[in-house]
Length: 231
Ligand SMILES: Nc1ncnc2c1ncn2[C@@H]1O[C@H](COP(=O)(O)OP(=O)(O)OP(=O)(O)O)[C@@H](O)[C@H]1O
Ligand SMILES: [Mg+2]
Image (cartoon, rainbow, N blue to C red):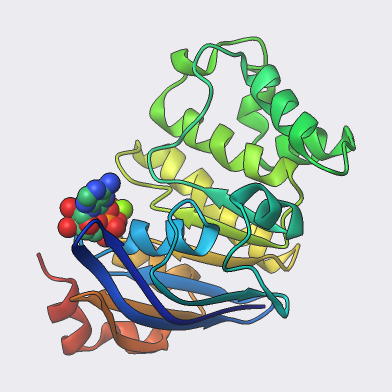
């Protein structure tokens, strides 16, 4: 479903990614892990075209999307939830979902209800401004916005970072349901090893701007993995 080959990225002269290869199969949940600052967000931004890679290729559903603008990738089915739960803080929850719907190609209002089914807590807060929600609720809203676009693959950058434990669990359950029941492919950046162990079908670990390890969830338990993830 998603193939990334030889991907390189840099900020000015500072190179961050040195030839990343990774693939996500339909219905697979792939976890990207690695210490702070190894380039996880840079990788996702390059996959989504928020950042233009300096080399390499991104193929989604057999189509080379490397040079496409971000919104076209979203229309092809790549749903992106960037790090730091981005929402429109001045708009209400309902308005946040509505402006996202207006930007989609399908414009099907049912997509908003479907997204709210995934996070029922948001239904009680439709008239509240997003900026006044807790961090965890904002993260749920950010994921709900991505769902309104009706993605076939969900790309999430540390959705549980800095969020209260009760909502971490709701978010984990939501990701699990979207993956298992709706068959969504997921590319998840997650530093929380236990969560990755529970959810991931496969993982890649980045270090030094390269993929250092790949494997299945079981391999996440070994010592070398712990060394690569240790701070
Ligand atoms: N806009 C930017 N301009 C210059 N350097 C940047 C920029 N964004 C990130 N970097 C640098 O690129 C490297 C990779 O950053 P990135 O944010 O991709 O890491 P990360 O793995 O997502 O980290 P974290 O776990 O903290 O989210 C870091 O050294 C960072 O300082
Ligand atoms: Mg990051």
